[in-house]
Length: 209
Image (tube, rainbow, N blue to C red; front, top):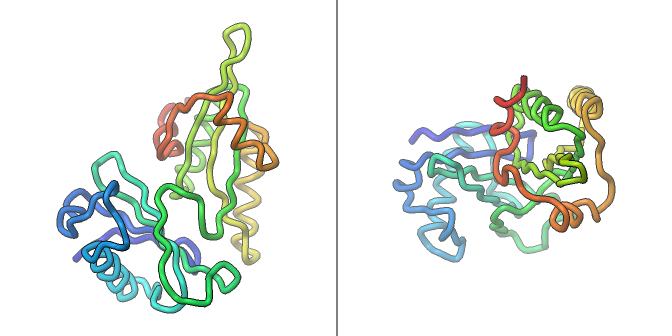
């Protein structure tokens, strides 16, 4: 078994499954259900392999599993260890599809020009951004538009990571404005149209001049 594994900090693991892997485990993103015996068996086989290869141990405590389809027919699985404050007293697994969970913070940035959006996507892609991202546009008067990037930011936990996190935020701030408050997501859904609903960072990065 050879799976593509990426550790994201100490508490999160990304697993990329190819279409061949999906066939091998008899999984589909649409029908992936932890109540299903085959799904449970596949997930724990993957977790056992990940522990052996990376040391990521998901056997203790509660975890959250997020599943995102890939364009090639495979899927990306994010496995997050939940802290005591986030988990119930009973150990187990939460299986989510396309939901923000774990330690990431939802962030939305607005841009006056599409090129600014593309440059930020290229910057993030080159730095290895691997979390979900979406892009939108808002039609304005006089054939103008405003563009938005929705992504997840991981809060810094130690000095080295904090410095990197701050540099990324400063770079994005040169091109766009961070929208504050929970109402930002509702605003996108009400006034904007999706440009890219999956993997916006990697999809739009090649469009930057």
